[in-house]
Image (cartoon, rainbow, N blue to C red):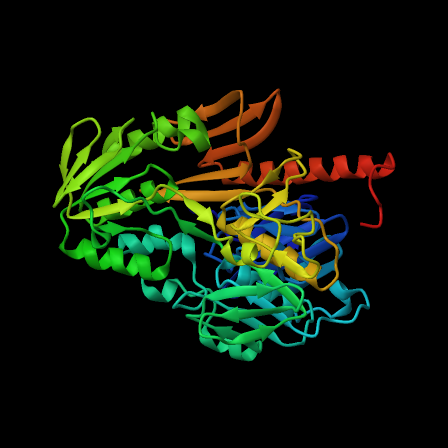
Length: 524
């Protein structure tokens, strides 16, 4: 509330000001601090998320954790540790002292350190070496988790990319729009890899895998032996040959290099044609409109995003873009290219200084397939993210895993989801045997409007809109046979967090019931 007095927590506040299972925000010196309560315990932690600076005081407490309302990072109230991506760094914490009916936040405490190795390895012998193939979010999250879990052995992160791991979602948003610089993109500074003894190998595509001999070979001939291996090779843009178009005319957006190239081309361009009304296509459209380009979007769908987020949100997103000058050519596609002219199937002719294709991606399975691993529209993994070859795991966009909610093998292309798979895979290759059961979450931000989505709905038979899309304040629930599969929200960040937590709790209850009924091994 504007003008509200922020309490000085060092000077003390009444105990009854902090609700059970809730929190208040205050300050200690110049620091924003959240004071939280769980039963007779009180915790004081930093009020700002270490991912993108989200306001943790507007987040959600779940047991002894605190979740960020922006991108659902999760922190321990006890230690400050970042428990779940997209945050990697801890939040600060302070000692809380109770004196009678008052609480005082005292001195700042030391930052948490990594756990002892036994926390994940359960006394098992640690792997002699770990190799991670893939320098995206899943790969980095796995490497970071291995070190935080106490793994002290050789750790190699091999990437085909030219750049160290970076924040891929930003490529089509602020960076492409020109509102964020290069310093925003690295997920870790160069010193991190040295300090954590992570051997980061760039510009090195891996071309062969020998699962029996436990070794891989890079394109330059270098052979890497491993005791445990994580495949986090991600996905690749679907490249469409367009009649009459040269390769130099077609732009894709997947890598940092792709985004830099688009930025360079946009400087001299006046009009862009984008094929595809997916999240990438629409985010590129919004970013290039921010740069002042005239934007045309061509797509086969009736509405943008309709296959993923339904008619209501699709119609809303189209209206949002049209209000900013984007022109849509829906239920249409590109027939051919004639120089700077793009000819649509409908016969419409468009000028294009820049032609961007955003028609989806396919999992990068070639390496796994060459290694004899089980493939089915992705690398098949079990509930622990282990592939058909013992000791080899897969995570991120390439992995097809058994979704406990639907009972189906699914592959989900979400950045936060990939990072969280990387974290779980890391603990499992140390011997933890932790089921991967995270609730999928993703977000898109266009023209300052964020749409957040928790859950996963491949198909649905009912949508329920609570609130107003026109007012940009609503929740859209996707259901099948009466069961909630996913919820998309606009301007309701806390509700999205609550949805995620409720889905997690429901799944845990189902698994607990199975164990009680003797259908599950309680040791797993």
